[in-house]
Image (cartoon, rainbow, N blue to C red; front, side):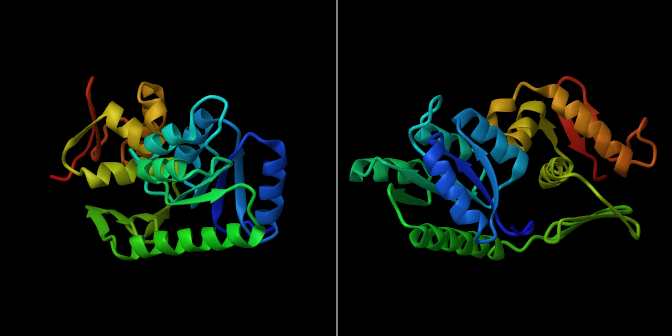
Length: 232
């Protein structure tokens, strides 16, 4: 199995279907993350940034429609619903909630792979329509298209979460971003009260990006409110 193919988040609690999806996708070069609950699906989507989500509607904790609605609050990742609910009303409800496609069980491997390819093409087209600039702030340079960060000529390697946190601050450069907004955009809606996440990752970002992390010049704390990327 390749380690560089698109990442698929499988949200399914039926073991037989999980085995089918795992076998079908891994042999075609896809990387996989698997979970059987809606709550963990939201956490995994935030932490792993999958390229496609395969989502069952009949989950043991949250209904798949609710998972879709919560995902759409903060991400445009393609969501393909896979469900035994085959009525038109079910399909319409899923699509209205924000799903990109709907597959009724049982389905063939060929159809599954074709739907994923279409979802990836649409996602790539959306990204191509929004070319992202290079952000510069004194010696800090962030190439948002290539996901590279530099201090002067030296490339700085950030974890995916550190990078996401930095890009959210860049999107709001010069303005205060509240703790809740940062937590929602970086980790997802279930984590809006986990301010410890922010403290840990902001400290890590400062260690990597600030000349003097104890007296930050760029990544500014607004006590009790949030953080701000200083640009002036």
